[in-house]
Length: 205
Length: 205
DNA sequence: GTCTATAGGAAGATAGAC
DNA sequence: GTCTATCTTCCTATAGAC
Image (cartoon, rainbow over the protein chains, first blue to last red):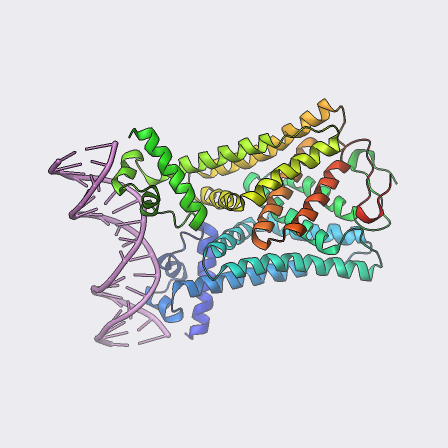
């Protein structure tokens, strides 16, 4: 089997182990056992374990970035577009909670590993960047304007979704989390020119 | 030296090592070196390393909970109270970023360690609980009402602050983060009866 | 490319003198 | 209570036959 294919096989196995048992438990032995190959195959494909970790982080982060961009769900109105994008992201959190938990773990692993911290920082920049792109597309295609600098709003959305995801991973409570998500969507919609919004119970036109 | 004092000394040393180099690097040897005691003292005070980790988590989480409760800063108006509490929390993030980073690390360590995950979940419940207490005190003492269920609003605030903190720890940019914080405070104020708010640039009365 | 065998080291934990 | 010395286990990584 060619080395490239082996590498992919080992990266996938590593992701499975990390998802199931955490980054700290993903030893070379656990990974090769998961991939059902011998220990020496590992070091034939990767000079050091850190090279595999790097490949895993690249894979996971690339995956996450692609998904973030893919949630750009156009809607007839700005409100529909925003709620659709929020829900698209959230559906994935509900469907694959372990994957999101692993992302947090890898972020911190990278932060604590010399030479890897830039990867984690760049990734968080990308999240905000993807949301910024979404907002830009929204404002131009629907010819609306924002009352708030798009960079601030993008960072607000990125932070809230990140925090709510972690909160949900710890506390569960799907309905409660969904209520928070809807509230946040309300807030973002507030920032679009031409709308005037009052929370929930006493909504005015 | 009595064992209780030794324990405290070792817990403090462990926190210093964890803050500086991360949880994974906080080996028993690194901790005793930091505390300047011999390795056997460690096992005289703690039956196993996990006992120390538990003491560390208790110490950090207790500290965090106390701080969360302490940020209940009363103000003449609901708006002042909310902005004051937000800023009190944020000032601590700016002052002690490493301590917050460590809290995230310990949360994930606990989640991945059998028997410890309940500690992490309870802690996140406490954060939301502290904010809920703050909102309750606000509504009763100032005789205002919320347009949104307080549990939802509390969880919203907890998630946003948590996400923004992590975002800031990764990306820095004090001014940008402060702008997001202010925007979030605006949102929370929106949920108080009697106020009608339109974002930033075109504020109306 | 893949295997078995092992080097070399660091981790948590213990033994027993003082 | 504290020390030095050591045990056991598990890790990453390498050597060398096939």
